[in-house]
Image (spheres, rainbow, N blue to C red):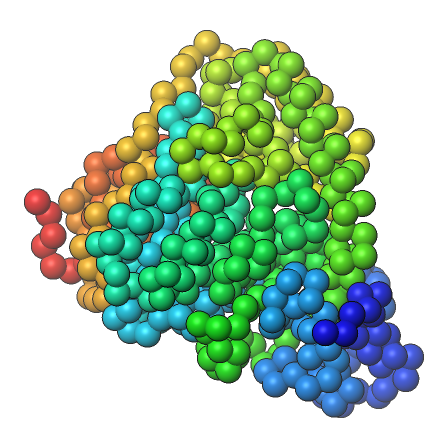
Length: 489
C-alpha cells in the first residue's frame, strides 16, 4: 500500500483555489459570498463567508464523492487506521445512527450499555432494532457509570446469541474504557458486528499513552467527534469503517438517508485540516496536553475536599484503561453538587467546563489548551473550595444509574399514542419520550422504559439544580408524555 501524504488538505486547498477565482455566484447560499449579510460578515470576516459555498464540480459532493472529498476521506481513513472514512456534518449523532442502521434491520437485537448517548436511542428507533441493555459498572464512591465487564457481555451474548451487533462507548464521558480488544474478539466469535461511539475519543489513535482506539482494537465501525478533541469545527465528525461484516455500500446508503445534501464546506475543510494536524503533529500536541492535565490533576488533588481521579481507577470494575484528558473532579466532599460548581465556574470565574452531574464536573483538555488556561481553572477550583465549601453531605443514589425496565421497544413507544401526566404522577408509567440532561445527553429514561419513583425524584432534582434538560414536549418538564395504555403496577 502506498504511503499517503498527510500534509495534503484536498478540500481546504480546493476551497482556497475557488476563492482566488473570484467566481460570480448565481447559486446558493443566498448571501452570495457574504454580500447579503453585512452585519454578520463584519464580525466573522469576509474570508469565512467566501468559502461558505455549495457543492459544485470543483468541490465534489458529499453524497457521492469522486474527487476532493473522496481524497480527504481516504486520508482520514489512513490517519485513523480504517478501510473507509466518511465526513460527517451533523456531528457524531449522524454517525451513531448510521452505524446502527447499517448493522441492524427491524427486529434485530443490539447489545449496548444503558449509558449510551441519546443518538443511540435515535438510531434504534430509526432502524427498528431491539435494545438489549447491559448494566454498566457503577462506582459508588464517585457516583458515575463506568464501562462494561467482559463477564457481563458474555452473559448477555449467552442469553441473546441472535443479536446482530454490540455497541460500545470508548471512552465514557468521564474517560473510562472497557476491554475493547477482548470485546471485539468475543463479539466476532458470535458473528456480531462491533459498533463504537468514540465521540470523546477522536484523539486516542495519535498517542501511545491513550487507551486503544476502536480501529486499533479491530472494531467494525466507529464514529469519532473530531470537533470535540481533534480540533475541527463544532458539528464536524468522522465515521470509520473496517470492511468485513458491514460493507461500504450499506454504510453509504444508510448515511445518505439522513445526511444533508448541502454539506458545509467550512465544516468539511476543518476536518481536512484537523486530520492533517493530528496525523503530522498529534504525538507532539498530545504529549503537551498530557503534561498539562497531569500537572492540573496533581494540583487539584492538593486542594482539600476535591478529588481529580486518574489512572488509579484502572482495574476497577468496568475500567480497563483511562483517558487522562478527561479532567474529572469529584466535588461532593466540599458540600456542593457538580451542578453548583459548574454554575460557579461560569458565573463567577468565566470558566466553561464540559459537563457536570450531581457529584462531579469534567473539563476536557485537548489541542487548544495551554499553561495559562490550566492555571486559571486550578485557581478557580481552589477559590471555590475555600469560599463556598458547605458542611452538608451530598448523598449518592446509585438507583438512578441502574438500567430502567424496558416494556416496549423504543420504536414502538415512539410511534404509540401518548398522554400527558404530571411529572410527580408519572411513576409506574411507560415513558413516551426521552428525558436527559445535556450535556452529556444520556437519557435518564428513554421511550418504552418504565418510569420509577427514583427517576421522578432524580428529574425533579435536576430541575431544582437548573440543569439543561431536553427531549420532552414540555420544555419545563412539569408534564411528561407517557404511553396511552395503563401501564402502572
